Length: 128
Image (cartoon, helix red, strand yellow):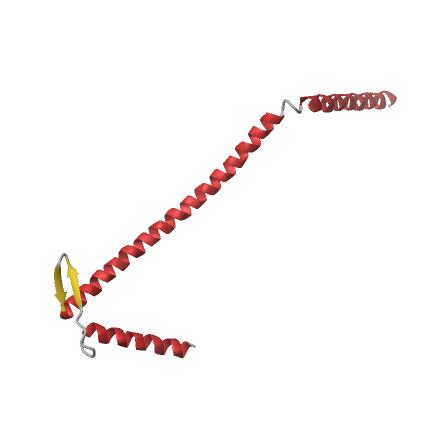
């Protein structure tokens, strides 16, 4: 597969070079800049430079967009976490009046249980 890939790349580069230098098939290479046509070797050089500049601008744009998308996704993740925390706090605040009777019962059980432990501890000290 490596040999086939190498041969394919060499053949494609040969075809591109033949088309660029305009000799084997007689195709003319023209570049149009603001209505002015440039042909021949100068047109070829100008076309390569302009295409390379376009590729460079495209690469810079792709890198900037990748950074922006990464920051956007990170920010959205933080917003989701904070949003879920806010929903949890709001839900707890909305349910707290409904849980008041349960909190009273739990408080009374805790109070009587604590009072019983204190009485048992006092009885143990009095016995010593």
